[in-house]
Length: 263
Image 1 (cartoon, rainbow, N blue to C red):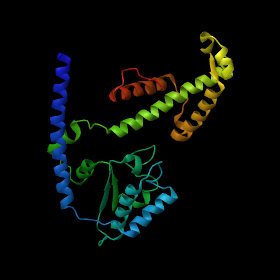
Image 2: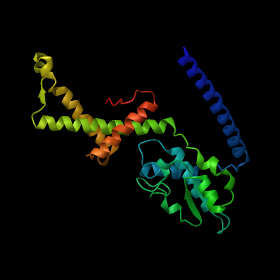
Image 3: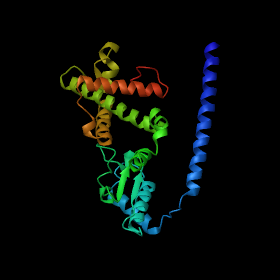
Image 4: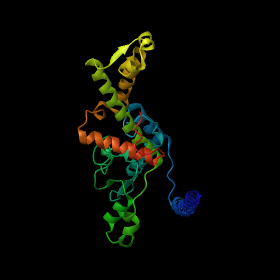
């Protein structure tokens, strides 16, 4: 009973605290949106965004529909083109590093497909509004360092699930490769359904049915295509330990028990 009451109190506190923070953030965002200049997405902008999709260039380099992101970057490009003065300066600020930042590199740099839009002088790329403001005026945020940098920003649930899925596929793939090696070296035997049915339980520990093995091979090829062969190992003992530890931690965050490494 005591544990239940404690849990309810924690939930109540969390709901109130987070609810107030969310409401305040929404109000601030609304004020900013209402005060901002409305920039329409013209048919020309939409057409250029569609061209990005057809050519598979950023932000369409990932397997998802990114038409909204494409319209945003093309709107930015259009604003630069329509600038009334050569002295105007522009900044593109985004936390969406997956779609706009350099792939597999420094996220502070734009994706290679977007580099032509940023010369580093008249047009610059940022992943933090605070960093841009500090670059413009180092004293502007002097009293807000704790607010901006002192508290860790919790990652979104979708980002956590995406990371968990990658780790899950890596762990599964490694186990599949161990099974393949055992089959090649004779420590595991691929058998027909009839052989499986006739075998004793202790014998089945070293058996894999032909149907299961066929499905496993197809799943391995799918995994290689999904996450990239470069993300499939092999791993050093340290890397393998880190992968399992990360998967365990992320699953714990999403509600599983510690050491839940089932694949």
